[in-house]
Image 1 (cartoon, rainbow, N blue to C red):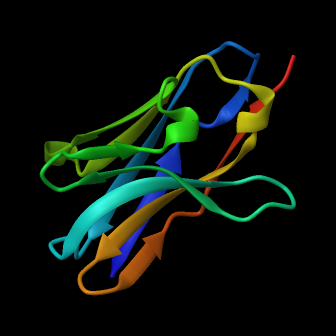
Image 2: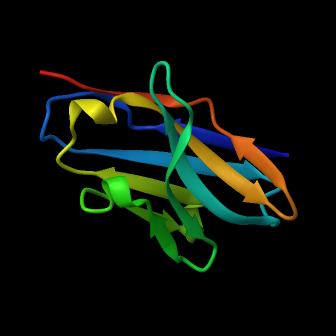
Length: 116
């Protein structure tokens, strides 16, 4: 089993920044990639960014100029660095761990609210 725990969400004004963290624990040796998804009210969950065990990032086009993803293997932690936040970034952000061959693990989610 794998446990994922997110932190770092909160209320931020438009144009502000936040960094989300996700710590993985448990049997993580089969996890080959981790990522961040988000789900806004009334919308489907969408992939925002992912990073492989080798550190190869994949940030989706709609946030690529403002968000970045990184990882610290020694801490079993990934980060989502969010800059120039907009109200449309408001969502619950979920950490995901992908295990070979086709198992997904999810964190409990952390709320990000962008509002003045």
